[in-house]
Length: 203
Image 1 (cartoon, rainbow, N blue to C red):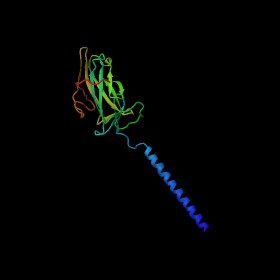
Image 2 (cartoon, one colour):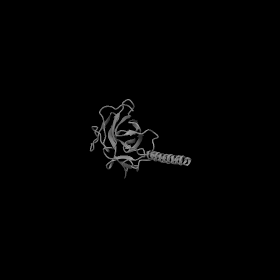
Image 3 (cartoon, one colour):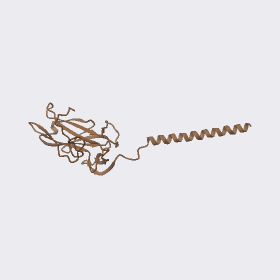
């Protein structure tokens, strides 16, 4: 009789050990799956690049970020200009964000006449007067992912452009023609601009 009890006890211990091992294995596999990187990257990195050699990252139009730009003279600051961005399907990443592409996140590069002025992590900026001498200039904002790739739709980057004219007597803002408008009136995806007749708030 004692040998029967001993045999049953041994079998019970074996069952518990096997069950515990399987359970631990399942938890480990589940944790590994949750922490593993997503197998599908964001969009498709194209061969096309911007002027600095940064590759375009193409995403579907329905998921693509959008950007509009307003540039208005600030009469109270000695000829500087207030730049305001409006974005959709996009969030500005904080400083120190990891260098990887996350859908709908990143930063904006601001150009004046195709020269990089600054990288923005907020929608407002004051453009100094010395960067906009007398004459007509193009102010362009373009959206980038945190890994440095350019958000793109089709064959072009997600950007918006406004034309501004600086003179000693007055400053004017005009919009370029709009081949591909955003849902915001007067805004253009990729190569357009959004200019408001009203003065934007200070940055």
